[in-house]
Amino acid sequence: MNPLALLRPGNWQALLRPGDWLVLLTGAVAAAWLAGTFWFGAPGQRLIIKRGGQVFLETPLTQPRIVDVGGPLGITRVQIAAHRARVLADPGPRQLCVHQGWLSRAGEAAICLPNQVSVEIAGRVKTYDSLNY
Image 1: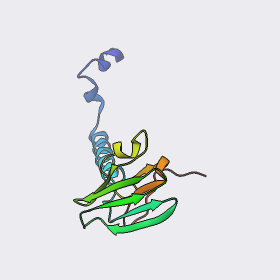
Image 2 (image 1 turned 180 degrees about the vertical axis):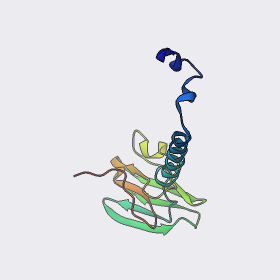
Image 3 (image 1 turned 45 degrees about the vertical axis):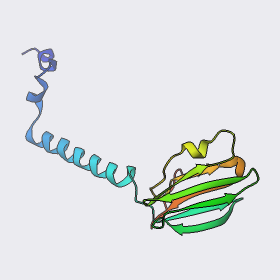
Image 4 (image 1 turned 30 degrees about the vertical axis):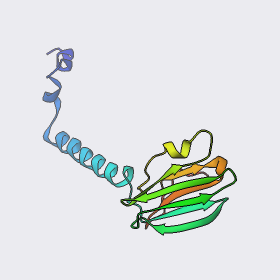
């Protein structure tokens, strides 16, 4: 038999044994579990707002409210609703923290650098966006 004939579409399944299918299935289940556990992360429990590097407010995400935080450029408005938070308005020129959108998972953050305000979601377990040596 020609070895290249096995590479034609539909013929490669003939090379797989039951143990190979078991390894493929185990790998797919492990990949799905790892993605669900580490990709999506844990839901946030509380909101930490910092102004100038100091904690301005720490509050649970269970109470809907709007918080105004004063900074060097003006007022940054933070909205808390439905166990998530977002920067509603900021006096910064590029509006990057406003475009960050809703934050709901532990470790997510929006930083309004020109106004020196940061919004971070914290959970039971401390998560890291990146690690440095």
